[in-house]
Image (cartoon, rainbow, N blue to C red):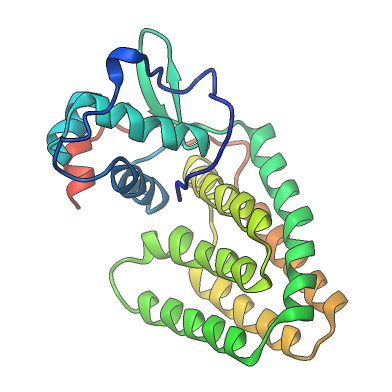
Amino acid sequence: MPRKRSSPVNAHAPQVGPEDALDTTERGPTVESIAQDVAAAIVEKRIPPGTWLREEALGRVYGVSRTKVRAALLMLAKDKLVETIPDKGTYVCQPSVEEAREVFSARRLIEAEIVRLFVARARPADFEQLRQHIRMERSALKGPSLGAVREKLLGDFHVALAEAAGHRILTEILTELVARSSLIAMLYQSSNDAHCSTDEHEQFLRICETGHADSAVANMMDHLQRLEASLDLGQVRVSRQLDLVNALMM
């Protein structure tokens, strides 16, 4: 999800000039809450890759100025969820096959260290928190929101693991990578089974509780490998036309 941090302005980010200075007296949702809401819609697959994020439409949805919308889009661009094409507009990113492979390669490197830190530092309360997350996954699978669960709730397990490991920077990086993984899953038609992912999360946690870090890392690597293998990286899903306003109101 979008977060405040220092980073250079992306060349493909919405350009904000002096005339776009925020009016601090403007009412309505904050820039951060708009960015978080749009990011959630992307991760939950309500807004697919390639969707044109029209500033005027977003302004109508949130009842704010286009200046505020541009600031929110800038936050999303820093998290690599959207990109701006000069003279055309801002669109939800469409990761390439190469980027998809690099995202999972980066996740394997980062999550191996996160798992080791977690096994070394985890307290009983951390295990209970993750068990509660798994119970939420299972409960959500019984409802109508399976599509959202697959990439949102299941992805959140990995972020929660990083938070419990106690490494703030790795957690920030992984949060971005998990969001980008969701875009990749949409674009390359992931065949990932949410039930299997929840079972694997549960198995992973049991291994962590034994204190065997190498076994826990190996289990997590197998899990990430299966997620990547579930993608059809030779088949890109064609972006559909959609009503942006209705998608955000769902």
